[in-house]
Image 1 (cartoon, one colour):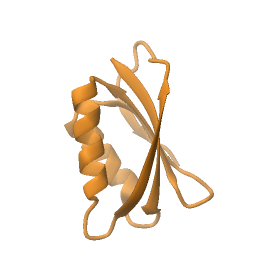
Image 2 (tube, rainbow, N blue to C red; image 1 turned 45 degrees about the horizontal axis):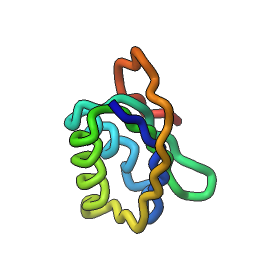
Image 3 (cartoon, rainbow, N blue to C red; image 1 turned 30 degrees about the vertical axis):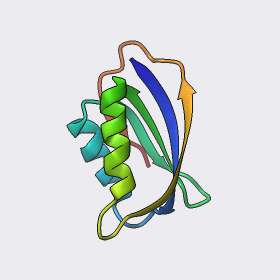
Image 4 (tube, rainbow, N blue to C red; image 1 turned 180 degrees about the vertical axis):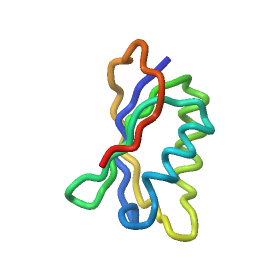
Length: 90
């Protein structure tokens, strides 16, 4: 089990990115949260098995016709025991 903070930059606000990230996290069986940052980036906290995290990051990098991901900066965090779901924060 691993936990990361991912700072995602590009065209990631006002394009449905938080919903996109939430759907992908649920599809990849991850827990955590996604939040817009004031500087236009998005913070995604993801926790789960490394293979599932890698799958989430691949989906995120691809984006969609509205979302363009230019960069993802990862920082390893301490695992949060007992976390049950992925949440979408305002």
